[in-house]
Length: 329
Image (cartoon, rainbow, N blue to C red; front, side, top):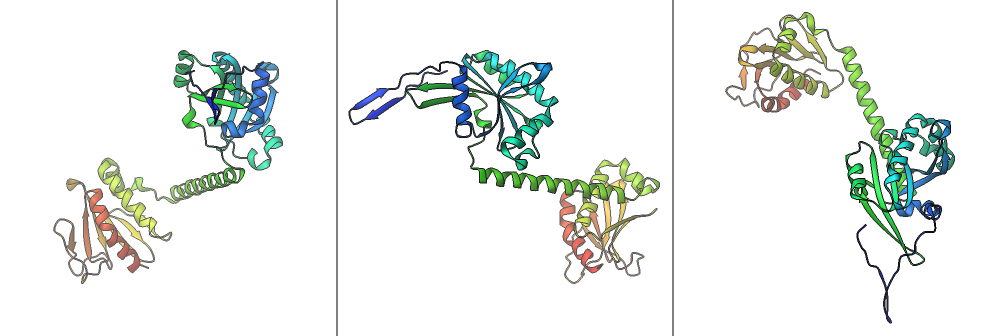
């Protein structure tokens, strides 16, 4: 631990505060458990919890941080290397006893905090008087989240903390209201992600069987075209839930109440040829990008063909697809 000098200054002068050693680890542990949230931003869950017949030990302190991550805290008065090995053993215990830990959280912090615990990112916080260079390397290279905190007491009531590793990952001290709002936001994000995955599953279930159509087979054989088509199809679907995909032997149709676009392939030029419904009076033609369809062509109401051979061309074509979508409603 680096040397830090702390003085108590008054009008009469400045007096350096001298270190007041902790009598034993129990005193150090008691100090932290009484002020755990203020010192670390962690909520207290349990103390000296027995880890059962397999581990046959007692975890010094168990906590839960504002991001719903379990925290195991181990204390050592002097050199803290042993706290790392012991704490890792308790993390392994936690993996096998998630239900036990959840019940501890419920009893200490309530039902709301016992839900959606992030066991995958459990933390180990080692508190000691000092950590050696090999301890810091151990914490840095370990796949587990290990944080090293040096502690020193000066005088009767001054505590000096120095994060040797992991201090940047320790959350700021939050009020209970802030923590509750953050948990609500996290629950909202998880719910949105669940809805997105369900929608993807539904889309996959409704996906046509392209394998029997030659156009789809040729798409699969040409990764560039396949990627462009998927991006085009996804954009068309984003315009509304009523967009359907209808592959045939000659083209792939995108339709709403009526066909809004026909997609054909030009593998030789590595591009998609897309037929859309356009307002020709307001559409400016660009050579190599848009071209009028001849009158009497057999593509329904479509009157403009668009050549798409890149993501940039697809972006330029999106307003035309949107116009075609509106016209097909």
